[in-house]
Length: 387
Image 1 (cartoon, rainbow, N blue to C red):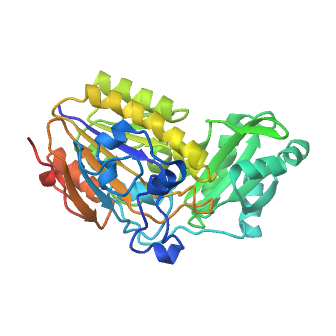
Image 2 (spheres, rainbow, N blue to C red):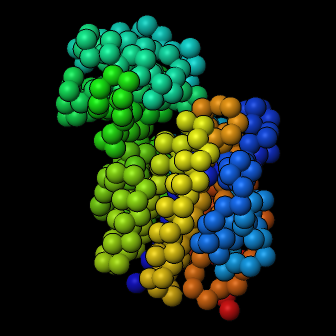
Image 3 (cartoon, rainbow, N blue to C red):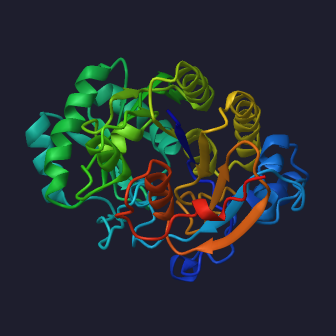
């Protein structure tokens, strides 16, 4: 049976999208701007896969590569991970999730407090590392949980692992999720951390509690047609587990890529869907282009391992879900094109240009598995040139 691998490199934008000016992101280019800060990037696998022909990236060639490439503009109104992943999977969001740049109204916080039995401190827009450093000691002393948000529709609850254990924090977030459904808030996120004052560190036990997609996605469509699906990383957080035959939690991109390579080698599934979150979570939001480059190198090295074992009948797709330009002076997502890289063994290089929705990926995966396309946009499979 032929297999498809879809890798979403979280935050890997490749230039300002057509509507970027309305987001204040007209100069954003996550991948390209990292290379402007760092200088020539040494990323041989990204180079071989043609990222240098999608946008100008210092150190990457635009002429010699082995994949089909292009770039995708987002059709949905939102600019967050949930909206981006849903559109990649074929579901276009006509309505933004609600955001609360000045913190959540007292009504919401009171309802969550009553539902959970916990009080909160913070309740403002902040970087996660910054807020736990500023409020961590007060949190430990008072046992009140840290609440914050960002430019996305997120209700984030941070707690030290010695104040409440992980199971309890997840239960608090599950109760908050029920309340947040009434206010169209995209995600409730558990943000556990550890360590001592001035040296707090977030753990990989973060968990997202998202809204279940309100329509058909490639996961539900494949499931209905008896194809086996595997979610790696935070896929189940964004889509739920109903249409996944298995979901594997990972601790960072190296672990995620190890899991993907091992699972693909075992060959038990038809569709492998993975999110790599480190570039966004560890470096993009923290305005750290040097760290972003180090994260790219980890992905680059493991992509080469994946290419070495890819079967001739199988399809590999690489993309992003939004930008998070670590050079733009903002800690929030940036409205950017995302890359489209499609690779099979023994194909010729081809740049297929711009597409007006991420959902061409869902359309193409449907086509790959011989299913009628029910999603917005056309399949790009016919634009892949076989040798």
